[in-house]
Amino acid sequence: MTIPLGIALFITIWWTVLFAVLPFGVRSQHEAGVGEGPLVTGTDPGAPLRPRLLAKALWTTLISVVIWAGLFAYIQYG
Image 1 (cartoon, rainbow, N blue to C red):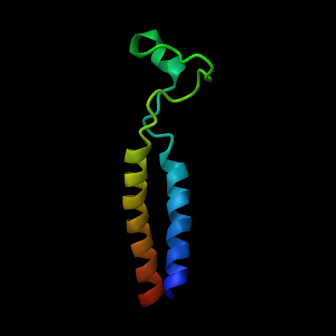
Image 2: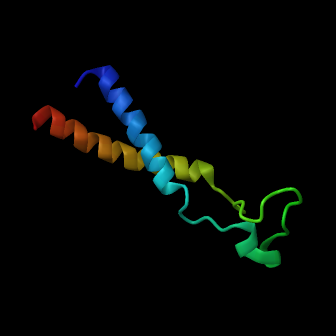
């Protein structure tokens, strides 16, 4: 596998995994109700209360490295 192919493959895997990881643990403003925090004026009630994007980016990177390493080993040593 060439370096540009490896980078392109990792980026593709990373974005795919990100879209799979994004919905985990998300509670909308509507689901949280008034007890955890008020609805922010001007936002959709379905907007996430705490999206935790940094944690999801880290999990996405870890999962992507594992998948990429598996594909790399398969392609190299087939």
